[in-house]
Length: 614
Image: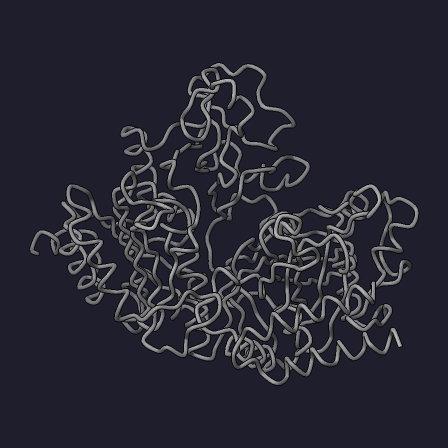
């Protein structure tokens, strides 16, 4: 105990509650030594990781890591929200009693870090001085050095973030123990892994992984699950899996901010990092704030909704990231940025990295190239020669400051005022390019019924979306009915509310399958229309499911569209929508305690569709 205190003293870690937390889990896990981490330790820790072979050089100032082949993605089926109140059980949060999960996890962790270093990582998931700072401090204990390096890129790391807390006990206690990855029974009936957020105790216990959201506990476990619970329990804010961007009209000087949720593979990161199309670049500047998490609150001074990105970095999917799809990301992970790549292909001779979609074809000469699992491409058996070189969930980790169009005020503690909240899922029909919603309950209803196409043919459920409320399905921490009510309460408290909208970049022609809308940088155009609608500069066309633009209202200079495609993009298929409403009703009926305002919104939309066809 005295040895631990000496380390904490030397590191300047003064918070008594944090010190008690470190003592407890150092003893439980059996770690051999303790090390307290600050962001200034990054270069030393990188060099130690290179020396140990945990990282490999990937060009000047970039690094490559390869995770265990059984440990390559989040594992939702092993992810649990635990509390002491059974009423917190929802459809999606995989709720279990805290009295069951805490002892189970602590028993798994007992002695599991023997022979290892326990790294103490004090962090902050908000700009310092934020009105939400009381919910942002945490301490992660981890036995893996590469996890520390990722945390330094993804959060603000240093002892000052916990030493200076007004309430010395108001930090999230987060413990990560890797476990014996070779013998955890991943995916079997004997699976030993558990990733648990004990939300009402503000404690995170993750055992059995060293990868991504399973191990970077400030990100999803704190930034989404814990923060969502805290926001609801306090009544003060929402924590959502939202992107956040800014648009500046250089002609008028006006700035707009839009946030929103998109299910997986629906274009969230590309939208967050987009640039203005060439034809509009002289007038509009798009700024990046965040691609994954936003915390939303109402500011009492002006009655507006404000949003912050609590993260300090981006943990992006490498697949299909290239100069066309996301030139912003490509620049953010260039040499000299300190980026860490995980589970992409790696050339051990040239230190190059590659992933599917980086270029149209893999490197022609396979010499020196190893795939994500470490297999030499040149030695692959014939039946595996066409297998992917990179894992489909391969990642890059880089700090926000590396993003070339990062907003100049991205660290403003107050956040930025939100003008629009958008939802978007990948659907080939029924959803137009954009439909605006001016009623709060109907906007929240739309978010609760957000969905994207699944593998319909295989499942025999043609036309049924996989619903993903607010894009929070994997991250819910309390029941869906209270969640909907909390949305109505928080946004409803704003005297100047954002406009809602649903967007869809993925409509296809039913004959030949081509995408009707070019997407990417051109996605700025419908967002500009949305802001004009909020300002009263355009009126659009009212439909039973919202307001859609007229062709004349959209700025389409420089857009290459086939004849007739724009008409289809702005048309509501009423009969298809009536089918959709039945699916939505079935979906909402699975949730207990959905507020009457949401059901009333559902009935209004359904009645408007019926009236349209009568």
